[in-house]
Length: 431
Image (tube, rainbow, N blue to C red):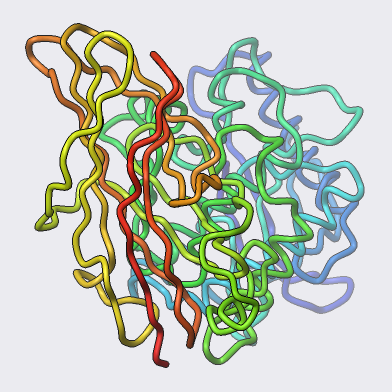
């Protein structure tokens, strides 16, 4: 929204940062007033937040009919610059940055301020290591007038939450979505929703699931919890904060979130193999990152376009318009270090075939029928061009030791209830 200058405060004899905004040529008077109103609101919003991770605003000065924000000078670089120069971050360092940013967001939300533009360019990494959230230029202050044109979408498209892309009201959960996208970009090196145009990016945000992260490690469940399409289903800020702090401060980068439960060894000691409850997962369209518990053992279910050598287990026929379902597994007995290395994880492919066009609704379940993926997925099959549909997932765990033995199956909700035979698997973590 403008240029930031380094300046000298001649009264207090200190260096400060001064933010200047110049209206683009040809912009109408009403739009100029709106732009300057946003700048003043940025100062108002930031000044309400008493937190070390939020840039301090000293003053707002009107000069030549334009507002200038005088704020603390943060010496360092933005997270965007850091990612450009050094590439993707380790999960532990990304968790540290994420926890600091989330701390700032929680402080902002506590005084009724939504940031609405959380992204790497607006996160500053000071030379002394301090993490600072900046640029509250499009922030929404509870009870204030929303200074945008009717129908205008304000914010960076690839970090925009689905509800705002659809023109719906936002809330603190919207900032959590943007934080999830930022964490994904920090560990993967690229935003998960970036497309070739702003319109396609917004469509991806609304309709698509992000590619499964490959470098996130223990951050995987935190990211997935923040990137749920429905705001009410996103991981609460307090829970995400504790998870991020746990990962940041653990030398082994083991998550502390309650959604990642005790080790496989503890599950085995309790006699648990396939009993337990599901952990909530985001809604799916193309790719999957659901979080599974079996007994007290935590596993991660990962899907999306990965080819495996599959062993066909035979067809199970469901009622309905000629729908057939099969589940095949590969690498179904693993013993070794955990997390499981790429290519060695138990993987499962569900194949659906119909004799006529059919929309099916299904989910992955564990062998005893307890839910693994609690949100139903849909798939269109049975037309001449695409009579068959497939979904491939794999399993891993961040436990250190222990054994988990159960099976994977697919439960069909429509066109008729049906559950396939489970494909047995075992995971033994030796270190």
